[in-house]
Every structure is written in structure tokens, then in C-alpha cells.
Figure (cartoon, rainbow, N blue to C red):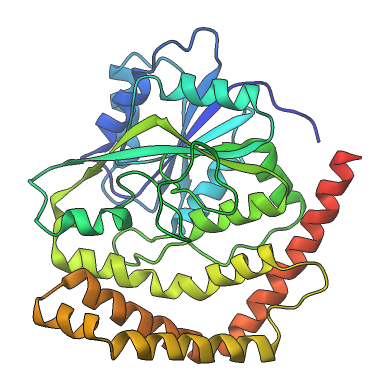
Length: 356
């Protein structure tokens, strides 16, 4: 596999972002201290209907077009489709996924590039996000900000802030994530099949592809790093600060829970073990059922209902829905285990071949 030249390709996947793409591009144009670093911006119009691509071109030209802006069309709704198209066009060794509401700090490119250049074991690299808002955030926002990819990134295991550097088997948000391009090329060579299609504008708020990418990177032998000095502002439009949108975003993760559990189980399972067997899955359902029953019948849940503790109440409902989804899709989940176990085996063989 021929190595690409050192440099960074920023991947901006957009859906109807005519009103916000200008500031996103302006922050890219203001990157400082890059010296002789080669870089480019790849923008994918993901089924936009508001002229985003043409507005982006005009804005970039007005900013002096510091590097090439290459624009592509992806008519299939879903961020995963757009990201795949963008990766197929990269010209440099590193890529950085920039959502159309991400405003990168001026040293983002330099910091990420230097870390990747000096640490070849890093496959994925992410940082810390702060929020900016069209309108003052509602009182409930701080309790839910993690679902908006805002704040310090935390462990899915115990909720602690991720350590600086290698985060082990934890995961990162996709917003602002650097990806070593050879990792993506390895996925293509191994015929990787994602279990996700990504969010589809504001119609489908189900996600999970960011976590999935972290897990498959670890299967391929790469490290996933968190670096708090990588900073971006995640801008919240007024329409994303309603209770209706919040609830759709929160419950949209129900659909992804079983799929991500498959990755965690397979990743942590020793060779020869079959976590996706019918017996093990039935044990999981029994354990989940007992846990959900204990939490729903608890004094804490009754207190949350009495005191209108929205996050606690929604959390219990989320667990109930996750259990229902797991039971309803039992056979499909068995198939997911087969697909991920097969990929893990191919990834192990691929990694072994590279390290010989």
C-alpha cells in the first residue's frame, strides 16, 4: 500500500448548512503556524437543498482560498455515506472530520499534525469541545450536553474524564477527529461493513458510527488518543435546543446500543470465545432485565419522578427501550456478532502481516 504524502485533508460533510458553513470555513482559513504543512479542504454536499456547496465556494474564495477546496456530491442521506466519499478523495496522510457546525481553534491543524507525525501508533485523535449558541441555552442543557458532543470527553465505563493520550478501549466523538488515512484504507482493503448509516440531517438522529470507528481502529492494532489541547467550538442552532430535539437525540441512541455492545464484547473477548452465541445472548437479556427492573422499581426512580428529574427519568426509559430493542432484534444481533467477529479475525491477520 503506497504511503500518501504528509499533510492533512479536512473533511467537511454538510447537510443544508448554508447559514453556518461560512464560519466553519473561516475558522479553517485562520489556521496558524502551519508553515510548510500541506493541507486541503474536501466538502461533501450530502443531499443539500439550500445551495450549501455554492455558498461554500463563494465564502472560500472571499477568504482568499488559502488551500484547495474540493467539492463533491453525495445524494444518499447519511453522514457515513458522505464521510466514505470524502475519504476516498483524500490526498494526504491524515484526515480530520469537521462537522459543518464545528469551529476549530487556530492551532488545531498544527497540534494534530505534530502529534500524528511524532506518534505513528495513533490511529484516531480527538480533543475537547465547548459550546456556542444562537440563543441562551435552556436550564437543562448542561445535564444533556454530552449527547451534543460538548464538554470534556468521558469514559463510557465509569464516566471519568478520559486520560490525556491513549484512552484504551474507550471512544471519541467524531467532531474534529483526526484519522490516519492508512487506517481507512485498511478498512477498505478488508471490505469492512459498517453497522451504521449515520445521522440523516434532522430526520434520523440515530448515531454510533464514531464509536464504531474507534472500536475497529483498536481491532486493527492502532491506539486512540484524547488530547484536551485540541479545541473546537461546537455551535448550537436554536432548533437544536428544544425539548423535542433533545428527546429525539437522546432516544435516538437506543438503536445503537446493541450494535456497540457487539463491538465491545468482541473486542474484549479472548480468542476462541463466542460472545454472540445464543446462550450468551440469553444470559445478557436476563441480566439486562434484572438490572432494568431493579432501577425502575427503585426509590431513586420514584424520587426522580416526584422531583421531575428529567435526565434520571429519561435514563430509565432509555434502558427499557434498549432492552426491548435487544429482545426484538435477537436474531439480527446474532448476525452482527458474526460480522464483527469475522472482521476482528481479518484485522488480526492484517495487523500481524504488517508487524512481521
